Image 1 (cartoon, chains in turn purple, brown):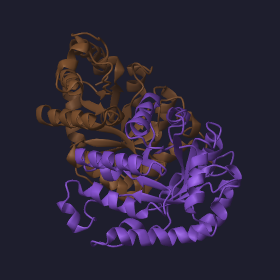
Image 2: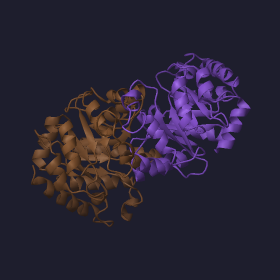
Image 3: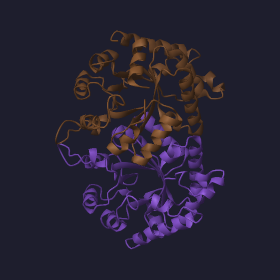
Image 4: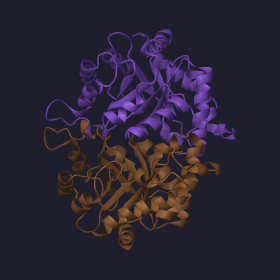
Length: 271
Length: 271
């Protein structure tokens, strides 16, 4: 999906909501365990009920990989379903890969081509040649980790460099030379105004994927106010657990839709 | 596997060789494509012929994941074979994962428990709470990326911090507080004496997993001379392509054994 199509969807739905499909087999409602593939049945219902309020879906790959072959099959079914039934939504493989060149090429092939994801999250530690293999696929996006919202994010990302600011800003400054804002986004787990202002000074127009709203804290208002790009929305705000597990019974999908709608209503004011 | 058992194996085989199972379906000999699982057939033959010279095997997960379900099946078969037939060898899931806490826990469960790997490689960018979930499993090891041998490794890892040396040294200094040398190793793609001396000043006794010998350049002699730990070997030196693809015909496994033996003979002088 190119930027124009993504922005058009954002304008049509008046939403920058990304639903994180962190689907935990132990947390899905009991009645789904009668299904042949409970994880897929759960994802399908969530997608069907939330797609009017969400512009993107982000399967967290660890949740599928940790279930072995059956997990990969659930992921495959989920992606096939999204690509066939809702081709307008943006899909993110939350994989946080980062490896040497020929290995990164294999990951790009797996996620962009076999699964037909629109994008994949990538870690920056191994530098340019671990990142660049994810570039150059038409209408595909690399989403680079810059600042993460977990407590350990400060261990290295906020360390100041001898020449310049904190490491995450060096990652932004260096990596923005590698790709345009038409094929690269950043993971920015910042919900604080001060961080968002600093980030927008460095990358005024790149899309930012912002986790950390909802269960992880942070408000939509602050992110929208300080995080939007100059030219267009330039934001995807992710919520996972708050939507997926809003209700643990048979009405889980309707409850998920209600939570998605609450977030979408906070977003529409700014769009 | 605990450190004592790993060191005993190193002493018995007089080798610190790790064979990287970067098995590329397009590079394996043509006759194997008649097998039900060509990748597993290739790995099995490589393992059978090289296990006298090697103390560790390291499947590079990208090569399996990029083949989808069939790739995961090949990995599962390879690990089952190693665990049943050669339980004395040390196994490394070269996954380079790095994610928030609950996601890391899932990866730990998948690789340590489902696949029964002895260890997994982990990226440091997201900090302590993305690393610590891999600790505390008896006889399992976390192998943290510190310095990588790819050209882009210098983009961030060699950047000097305002208070202290380059980033990779900060990673060593911080992370060594999180775990002892009985459950944590480091990936150090350094083959130059100066780097190995600096690293050994910071982590004198941790095991180092050193890629970058063979096809990627670097000599065994220099790594052994400057990289060994004080108390015991403290090294695993990886070679992948140089061993796996030493011959492209029916005698591929014998050729692999010859290459493994050449490396082992360079190592035995120091052990």
